Length: 100
Image (cartoon, rainbow, N blue to C red):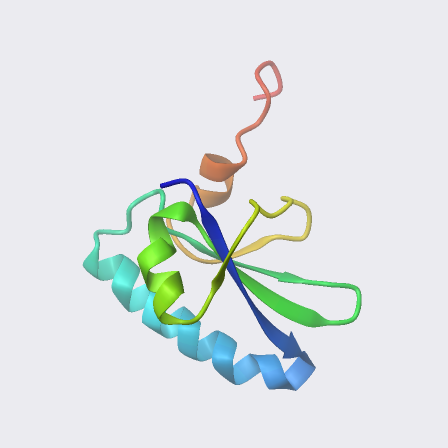
């Protein structure tokens, strides 16, 4: 499945506790699965300080349990890896050929 999921956690301090809760649970789930390269959790902040979490396609079952909604693949700019394989960002956003 190649569907991404997202969950908006709100602004500023309101987003801290749920981010940490989801990040911890995701870390445990990813470790139990052997940290597959297609299972990653990303975050992004918008101009107003709202925090959104993005679950990669390999994390769709986990995302659904946390009420995340299907979405388009997020833009790479501003995206931060919270949990996942060290090369998850490069896995989902490979460099164009010739620029590697």
